[in-house]
Length: 268
Length: 189
Image (tube, rainbow over all chains, first blue to last red; front, top):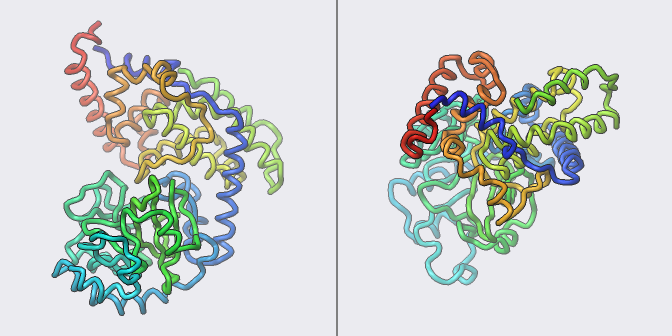
């Protein structure tokens, strides 16, 4: 077998062609305008994320990752407001880790969760842990890499440093592909994004994995930005505008949840 | 190689008098660039991603980003097409999630027609290639589709030449093993 020849043959095969759809160029040009508008809006809003955009056009282009677009321009609250919320809620989230939560502990920590009358029947919330406003398990937005590693919950991703110089992690026991980061930590802003991981998340507003899209949009009616992902709904965390939920809806149900800092420099 | 006409088209693009200012002419020229480069980019995306749907998604998202800063891309890189292709290779590797957006750029037939058209899918080498991790796959595509050297691949992907070498040799070993076990004799010649 001559693999070189076979590869050349394969890559020359006409069946590799993909027919272009009518109007494709127009669609792309319109999309480019949209991306540009978002970037301009974000730059106008200030925020250090703009620096990343200016600093590296090449990185912006090559780092597709979650980096599809930029946070919305209406997110203009300083990151510092995060600190207060974080320190206030940190102790309870620490407790969540050492003792797996029952619905009792949840009720005490998830203060804004709707009362049982609005919760769907059954035990959908049993075994869930608070996701936000700033923390998940012992992890919290803004914490340093050292502190986050010390929780023992995360382990470096196969590709431990992202193209933007942030540290990327998997949840322990859940190995992801290279650069598919469950947790991202910026040298400047600390922990800026965490995905739902080993424990089922419940937001203070009562949204869990499997919640309906209607419930999600009732709980969070206003989009705060966009990352360009399919089925995404990016919203400010109520009461903590420095934080956002980045929720992915598939087939009408919440499929993935992320808690992120509105201002960060790890992705667009 | 099938892409050669597009490569030749690059210099012609540069020789035209283009107003690099912030005017409508930029958008028009970007539209033209998209129109001309799209077939080649979709094909290249198909090789990179392993299926036409992801190819369309990749081409669309990378072109949108490039178009959003078209004047600086065209200005600084000198070769927007090569730049776009490299951006695609990197984007393909770094995608953390392969969710698909609504496809706006490729006309991919569904169901029966698809099966017929993409009977290509059944090629053992194509299947083996698709199963490679994204980075190894990108190395192979850059090497055999783009015809890049080891050091050019290293530069494109922002990794060391040693990494390229090891990824390439892993990939080739995997391909050989898979082909040997799945289609014994098929590639003997």
